[in-house]
Length: 90
Image 1 (cartoon, helix red, strand yellow):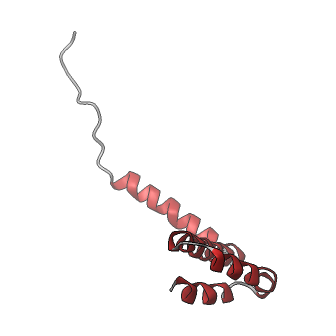
Image 2 (image 1 turned 180 degrees about the vertical axis):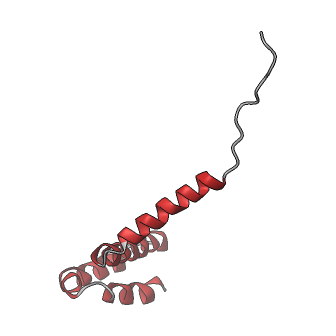
């Protein structure tokens, strides 16, 4: 079942990568005994494809800026609950 999705995912990779590694990756995928390991291989191939697209197209700059903006928004909008102040002198 997952092989139906795994093979086209390998075709999305760049040509040089496909020519060098796709046959070997399909062979390894076919030799995996369970669907759990097959799911991991599918995850690994999709992660690899995402990183290749992200870093080769310089989209990582926008992804990093978006991530930093999310952190800043969280800090700015998060209510501060500090230690309650006591006005009594000890």
